[in-house]
Image 1 (cartoon, rainbow, N blue to C red):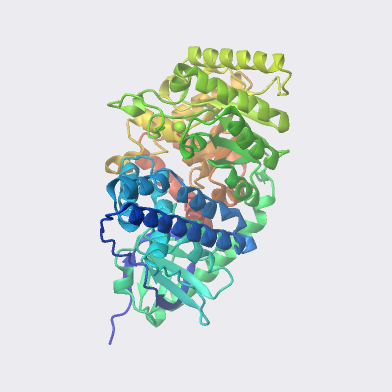
Image 2 (cartoon, protein in one colour; image 1 turned 30 degrees about the vertical axis):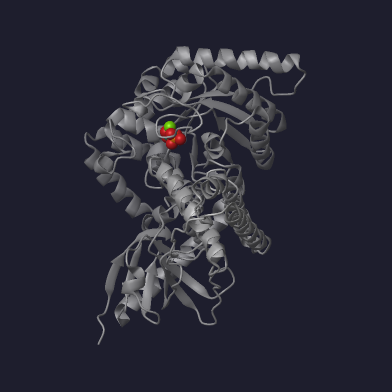
Length: 593
Ligand code: PEP
Ligand code: MG
């Protein structure tokens, strides 16, 4: 008799709970790549031709998948478009051909070497989101190799019975095939929270757990399993009582999800009538549709570095302008806050050679970089100003630590305005200018900075890092990264007060703003706008609609009276559990994916 209730722990990738039978997929285990030397020029020419044919076949295949994308997944078409771009990227396309020509290698081996060079480059990237994009290169590599070796197997996922898919990993194309088929959920060995499979599963509202080592070995086809996409837990061979418990959990969650979704387009007004604005943070124009879907009142933070990182050259004014215009127009009449380039720290441009820094988080980052590289900065400011003619636009400067930086940045902005004016180019002359408050010095100087700008946005991701001296990406000290730390709460309070005194608005755009647990405290401290990952918006709006500003103020007052983060956490968690039991159980998972 097989063991009951075996618990396996993976990474929660898409919320929901499902009970069903497992279907283990095999067949993407990789290909053998053996080197073969080419001896004659004719062989080299043939090999080049063979490689280009495989590239064409892969492109054809990707284009046909693009065409067949189901309507509910159209917003993710950029994944396949990215694969088409990677396919012709010089680091793969040219490099493989160079290796065929110069080292007389067969296509498979040349491609293998080119791919591993790219992989090495990705290994040195710190930003986890960008680092995870190696999966796109991986996918293209597998497809290409499959066409070269002639044994490319794109698994067709069509099932007659409802199943839970268990696989080493799934390609974006395979995941998209799940739409409309009786696939109940999936579990993969590879992948993280930002993997494409996770993103697509969220769109399809299918529970998913990723990063579960040995899933394909521990689970067999036909096994009854429970997938809890909220906690990342898998229960193998559940007994009757466990099944019942999870069925109840599934029903409760589905009711909660439906209610939350219904309210996403409603305004975020507290029970005593105070209106709040809930915005989305985005990194790419493609995310605008998601922001709108989840009911964003605008874009509170457009992190613009991703276009710079995506391209292999410094983007031209026209490229930037088109990108910003697209976002501004798509969000109209809502507001879009564009942050100027925040490069350095953990994001570097490979096409700009800069000396390595011992301590990049304290180095030439964000506004400091832009004030040094004024041509790059001016080009971006020009593009932002031009986009401001197409909808409500604001600009915000990151990592401000002094009045001088604001003045210098504003001086450049004015000089760019003068250029545009003399060229007769349209832009909003009174484009609002903001400062991100994410360095302790900016908190101390908030009342002075407030006289120099039109608005503040508190970037808690960095503010917590710099205030508590905790590297935001360092797992060793992750448990010390405490948003409710008394020092952090006092900083937020002081910035809000300085903003109020100068009659400028104070919003927040760090991750803290999107966690429902912290919301009452933030409202109580007087933060007026909250900007977050789009998926968090419906839950956050719901919490706002269920609490009064008076209650929130009391929660904040209580928190400020406590001396330790443990006491504050304890009282805030207890309070949240009491007030919003279902949000506490499910909402945080929905919001903080
Ligand atoms: C922040 O620091 O809180 C912030 C929103 O900016 P980023 O996460 O892009 O540094
Ligand atoms: Mg920041």
